Length: 98
Length: 132
Image (cartoon, rainbow over all chains, first blue to last red; front, top):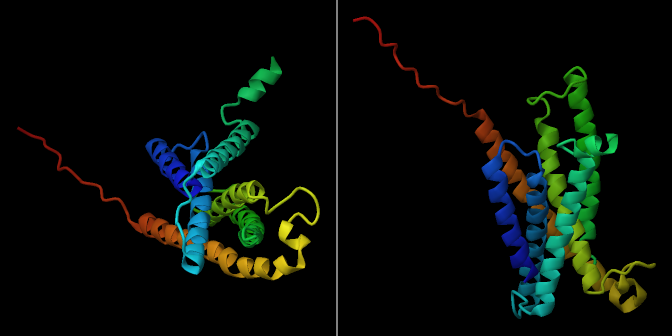
């Protein structure tokens, strides 16, 4: 389930990045590549595990859904931290000056 | 078990390579990084972002499944000698597979970007209409 949720997040963030491209002031491209990296890694994991052990390709249950949500939230936290630290709008500078 | 360690190792190496390339591009550009010169550090940046993003999110998944713990030896498979061999096998197969897949996708992205950047946009010239 977390593979599907991460892949969906990757597609949505890529679409948002493309709509605003070439402007990437808010680093949506970074978030998109984060999701794509995780999607590809889990895809390799799922395919190799499926070929070796068989069973269900997607694990669909509440635990897997909660993991998928946690993964997306962690990626968003990393993205927000990167955004606040790099401060592309200069908001922190302005706020700290006043 | 610990498959994300292979992409993590690759991410460390490619981050160092990106920094070296970035410095070389800055030197070549006379202290300033111009867009044409900075293309390789930009392309390496795509790989780094995919690798680090994947590693961070996979680390969470491993913590979730109890395969990674915040105390030594950090990998639960290391606590039982019988689990060490399967862990190393997983690192050698799934871990390497993950790193290879991300790198192959990045190579395809770079090939497409190179092909796109070589295409010169054609400007349609309209003959000037003038006179009576």
